[in-house]
Image 1 (cartoon, rainbow, N blue to C red):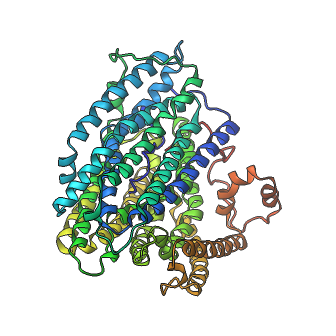
Image 2 (image 1 turned 45 degrees about the horizontal axis):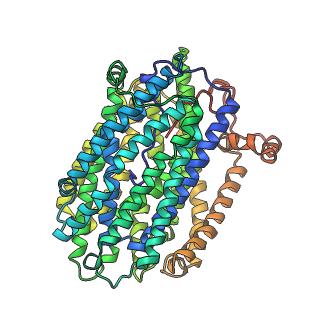
Length: 610
């Protein structure tokens, strides 16, 4: 999984709902989701800019890039490992319950923020003191100079754990009091700060050049600016949330009376979800350790080093491929989760298969196309993050290869995400944990086996392929368990939709590939000439692919297209009129199909996460 972005919170699951407030009006929910989605989108775009700029500064397939990536990603994973599940799963229902008190939750919130500051400060201090051992445990074969630089980076980056904790708890307080947008927009501040820091770095030290010895020439000033600037961005991301906190009307002051907060009880209820998150993050740390072999092996090469992908390239590929899932599948799954939860609470379990079928078919429209688009455009996409040095094209091609492999599992990743919402809606967190654990064990066994059988220079390619394979296995396992418990969810109809949409996506992909070929995308021509040519190529190919795809879907009168653009059409009058004028589809829904939800808008939805 991609770990460079801030910790995101998935929807709180039914098993930990103590009391939930009355659902807000659909229109209010729509505005809240629009605000959150826009914040996430802007943050992701700026995150891409930051990642591309960092490649210009220190390269993408270089020792310093991998070393900095290692030190800068560890705080995110460790935070999610030791506390992320507690913040994202346990605290939300407690905050909602406390908000109904006479003081609107001021006392409880004060205790919670105080506890967070104390606990996370102690954890961050301890982790920072252990920076050297942590780096040694999470790397394989690194030289003394690489370990020294990684430890120096870690000293500056590990304090981020504290600020991640503050950001998460204050953000959840704001969400519990209806201030949804700030939690999603705060990362924009982080990305802007980091872009400014990296720009300053380039101004002072220049862009990376392939003919330099990075490790030998690296200075303390560069370490402080790069790693310290990264932590500064995370700190401001957390601190900016205290401004809107004052608008909630809560009286926040230090309160060390932690007894009776109820965290033990709720934590026990949510134990399966917390265990699942721990398993996932432990697996991420171990994958990271195995991927570090490539960085050490690259240093021993006399030629072709720029084509050996390392941890930076692997995480960048994950950052790109997870974007369609985050924008489309996560939003649609949030709506589906609410509908599924109502069905179980109202004793309408017979409606679950139709609801799940509708969700899977609707998400096929954007996700299948995105998968094909990433495969076709993997080269120029990788070139965006290849940097500006002489080996930028080779580095871009190395990232593109990882993109191609990981994109193949994207539809299955989103399908799995939808399928396990059924268990969460039924207040079953044990089954998703067992799925997560099984896949993690299989994946890690395969990863460690690969590390023994294939050259270290190809280990990251193997892990990228493994990511795609585990996504497929996760979807299959979730499918089997859902069918066993709830019966057929119109699987044939779902597969028919994916196949039809897949053919349309392939035709649009062929059109895009033709444009890419004309622009030298398969011969290291114009498309690989630099970042700006790569952007132009992506724009030209992307426009062609989208137009062809939409025309094919429109000509086929695909019902799922209407379902997908429905929420958008309600916000754009002209588009809405176009839908009313559209001819009825040839594939009409049977009367016994998905029950009428009354509205496609999110209703009573809980806050969802990056």
